[in-house]
Length: 205
Image 1 (cartoon, rainbow, N blue to C red):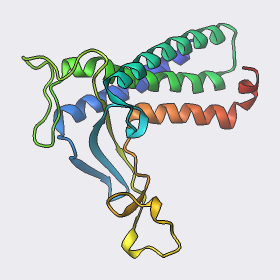
Image 2: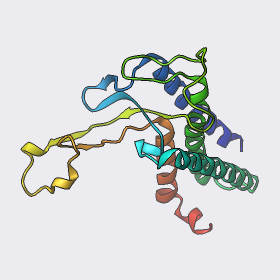
Image 3: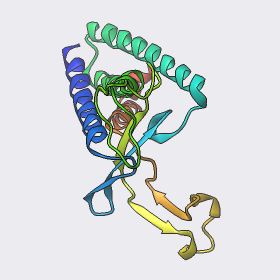
Image 4: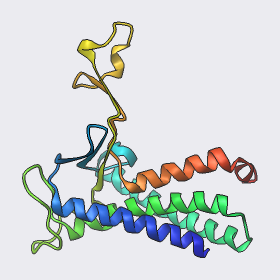
């Protein structure tokens, strides 16, 4: 269990440190090029799921937050149980990454609305504002910033055999278009790790 806790701690530390820095130093939509046009820090926030996908309304967001909390509790208990049974480290690593990522985004939803003022396109957020935060418990926005537009194709210049539906409303196909965060990356890494390298463990579930 100790190794699982170390993984969760370091993922949360990196995830939350980056999110807090972004909130306090960047406005919505602001970008910092890290590797030319291939890797960009792009500050955005979302009300819903991973990779910027939205969930329906305030009640939908509340339901999603509660589901996340219950899922994290269940996963934490399961992780504790299997580590007591001396399961190999492979499955523990995958589950710990998923747990850390889920916790990272829960923290945003649960407390960011209460401890930060709202971010906008023109002003920075402040920590512990005098008038209180921008939202109540479980209604905070999830901070996203990692953007990898590795391939961009303009519909105007694209071959005619490429179907038009793959282009966005801006007339461009971008791979990879979603903006995400360290927590999302941890969840994806954990899931892929289990599916690709721990299939024997999954078959026993």
